[in-house]
Length: 426
Image 1 (cartoon, one colour):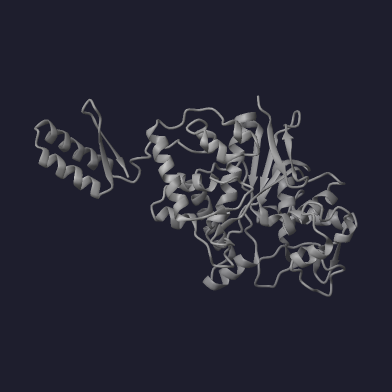
Image 2 (spheres, helix red, strand yellow):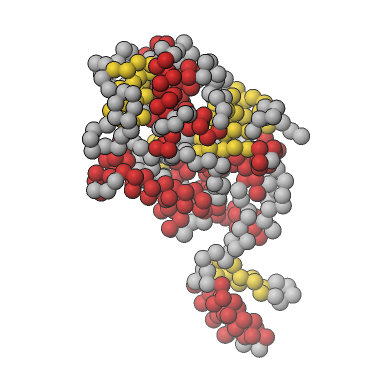
């Protein structure tokens, strides 16, 4: 069998992937901060790593693959949204977690093996407070002014993942200047909470975790490994988030690497710039779904470029994806198999060219109602019966009128050579 090779951000090369003997295959992907609807750029990461999840399950068996994608449900943006709406932060987080699950399911994403919430892993033996305490005990973190910070100068490998100099990292992180910091790149592990903010009791006072410590603790808690097989996320997370995760996990676990392979998907662009909520140039999967685009067409559009490359998002891209799926469903749908191109670092452009083979692994061509979804099937069948009767009676005018009325509703009739009639949505 052709081996699976994956691009490792840490080494900047494709590497052979093989499961460790007697170990599960472990995959962790940084999920959303739930303060609003995910945009289509966020959805690209979900779809890309869902494809990897499906491929790993196909290669090694569903029972062996453990995939975790977290929800950050404690964050300043969540709290700000809660203040705007005069509700508890948990209300905001629950609302947009449910929306994310609904939207990603509509794009054909399987539910991960684990979907941990940050607030569920602050306390406990493998929680964030315990990991922060371990980092303090090892001398790589320090407490100051109600905060606990990781001391970057104590970790010699800092910067190796992103391959940036210290000056570049300090500038790129847009670090907060604070008198309690020993070094400008030192990052927060714990910070104090005001009385009206969510907080947890800790040895350093009532407070809440910094962003970076969340994933390190959840990886250890839900996947049960100090070193996992694959860690994924968007390209924008390489620095500082993943660089910081790597540093704190490696120090907490006596030098054990956090992941064997680091994978990152490229940006989705709207026009000439990266799609971003802060820039206001976003479109959400929910907007596209509500506009009538099938989730499978959105998924195909997101997979149309190689995951590591940028993807320009346009209406034309969606139109092409929908037309391709129409052709493939007419040809009979999925024929099974695994496109070999997927084993070459998820080469979806080549794999899509090989369709309809391998549709299931790609999360495509599984809809039995592709041409009829969203249509009142019983009413159309009644009209189709009237159409057949008119044709049988050679009442061509009535038959044409029925056909034209259905076309106006987006229903296309197809008459085979043997006289049988089928319909589909167009």
